[in-house]
Length: 188
Image 1: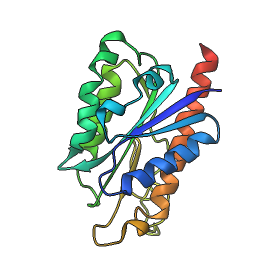
Image 2: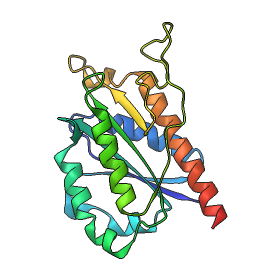
Image 3: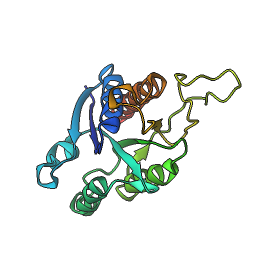
């Protein structure tokens, strides 16, 4: 069975909920390990090296990934030098309080991290909910393409955001990355 590691940082709990949804989707077709970034010394580098796919997640702060996620990305230089993640399947997700929040800056950083490591990126693959009939809980209401994006209103309690549609988008994306990983592993 293919193994996926979902490695993420969450500052206020919103990205953690998104990570759990991504992991739930991936678990439908693969073995999944969820890694919350809190202490860089506790990162399971060997598990990341042994995985078939890695899905990165970070909140968007000031147009880019959180400092804690950036610390992880910077610390991955040994894995980069050893090509530990070469040809692994990759994906990513982010969340911000603002509708746009410059989430594309974070997704670009996650994609660049994957490309630096020689990984194979999987897009979201879902049409956007961009008609006049679109609702807050529709799948891909943010209109993402890079990966799963969510929006969490800053004035709502953490148990109410991200909305159900954004979490379903995350679940579908986790499943898509896992399915691509399974196909890729079978083709080796």
